[in-house]
Image 1: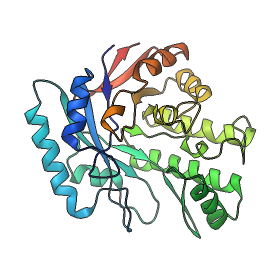
Image 2 (image 1 turned 90 degrees about the vertical axis):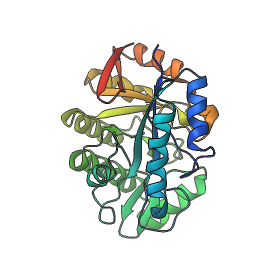
Image 3 (image 1 turned 180 degrees about the vertical axis):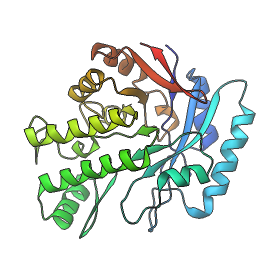
Image 4 (image 1 turned 90 degrees about the horizontal axis):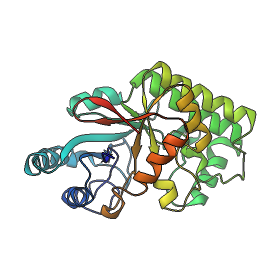
Length: 277
């Protein structure tokens, strides 16, 4: 099957390899379409996002690599934008300003009256401590805020790709809630409906599985089936942070999508197009 990956990170943000090292690995693994998607700058000190003073360098280097390797691979410039109400500028406007080929919208930080709840990262205690600080330990309120923020992003910003939309489950591990609880399923279905209504592309993200942080993809299998039922467009992403990860579980995910009822998956060659599974 045609191989592609539109969600990748490099040393410009929290990745471990340079842009060129990622490209060379993608070529070696026979990937035909590859997107650079640095974590966007955020308006506070951090060690995971592209820094404001590096934006021009990032954009210029991706442009250079597109030309250098044009006979071997189709490369595209993107960013994975954090959607954070109130403190974020319009991510669609920023994508236009940077002249990106497409952009990913994700929620990693959930806004509350008591600060930002960081739901990602490698440390479970960060998730737990933030839940207590920002939502006084009220998981239903916290998770509701996560999905409401995601839906708001989909409706207001209309990102090309919605990133790992159920990643709030990663550090939960059935401790605070079960994914078959009615209130949780209702939030999932509202989010899927928002993607359907706004013609979003939902990424099926393999990173949680190959990193051992999840026993299923983001989103998990039940929701992958619902996406098929609702005919929501999907793409496969490895969310790679190292050159070795550029195609991890791509083939397995393709087969899984087919088993879950999907007939096609979407890729980008300047325009979004479907390819049969």
